[in-house]
Length: 376
Image 1 (cartoon, rainbow, N blue to C red):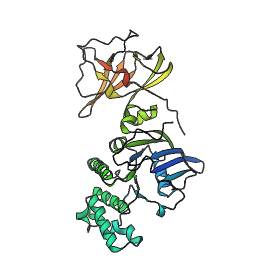
Image 2 (image 1 turned 45 degrees about the vertical axis):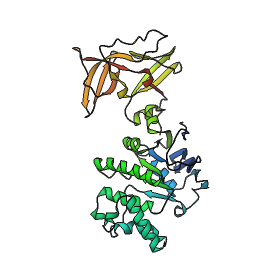
Image 3 (image 1 turned 120 degrees about the horizontal axis):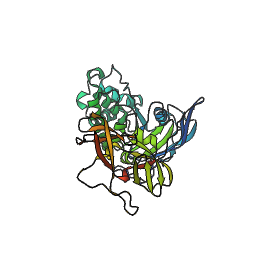
Image 4 (image 1 turned 30 degrees about the horizontal axis):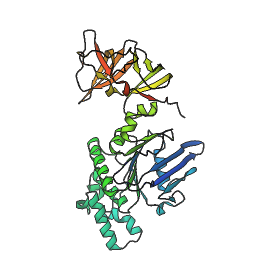
């Protein structure tokens, strides 16, 4: 299991060493169905944490436990030094933005945002000031008198955010709030949401099944698999140094190479490269963009001398198919031993008369990962 709190994590809005939120061995069972298993995680003040996972991994259940809509079967949740999971939802300084924004259609934008404050019987002058401030933060002041049906999906999402922010929570939970938007608006809102989080300085826990969305927005990603934390790390770390085969395959694309390690050399079919991995069977992740079309004018690296650590490993492979992806192309190639690799390149590869091309990769880019067993 990966370490759940990265001491190297830094955030410009983080001021205290103590975490804002601490989950301690949280589990949730629905009868015999185990949805969450032993979730332990610490989240910093001002952090943008994304809980990422496929459908059924337990993401929304975890969010509902934090919000108070579900009770954990075991474990504890602490917030700012106080036990959170024993408090009713209305006592928690936690707000949720749902996938479906649930705006009242008969109310104006400002009435929707003010609703919670009116229920709490705050003074009118305070309500007016806080609603105005919340709408300004999400750039919706000009639409204060509009009904939800008269504004776009992206604008409705901003209103839902303002309604949550107006209550001044210390923790904001977002349950796939961008999933209903079209692709272009979704990308735009990702940037706006991240900028807003930086501006208000509130801790965000964002749930999504979209890997790209998680990579773009997060300070850290908590990858859930079948109710367990698979890895928790920054987007750069979780992509470039995946801990398990599942992480490597779920976050982006990868080539998984089964290798035999002997005397500091990993051998996978026709491929071999130097490694510091322990002797025996090993599994390595090699990202498609780490395999490059080799410069045919440069001499191949010597891989047979044990005293020499090559900068690159050369291989020849036959092109099987090629898919255009705009700025780059995805190629599938077959090595001499029949092993198929995927590579991503921005340059048009030079293919010889036999339909083969020369490729290379750096040994450091072949990352040792733990095999991932099937889970129920």
